[in-house]
Length: 143
Image (cartoon, rainbow, N blue to C red; front, side):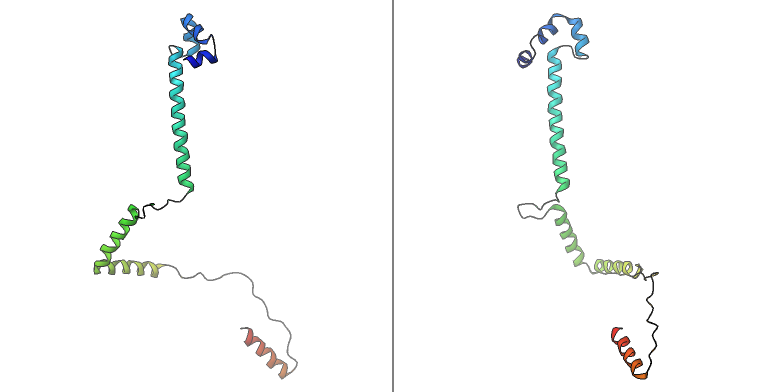
């Protein structure tokens, strides 16, 4: 309150002298102290939310780091325990392998290249047997 009086002298005095004027100027707040208190609460809440938003943005930008103590995280421990349990049971192993093979077999193969243009061979005809042999050797070498 002292800060407010120092920054705006006469504001608090005017609020204290005319109650009708205060009600019109301060809206739903009954006095300057209530307004100042509400403002301070609002400012504190805004600061908390801004800090939380910065934390969330920083966590989104950076991939989750492993625990610095060297211990694996909870999901990693859960995966390890599931792996150990599954590797001990032969029926579970067979079922996992069978499911994998079914998924691989049902997957489509490599797509065939369609469209495009073909490159025609040159339309020169050999003039002699010797030249035909040379062209055949080049063709076989390039294939």
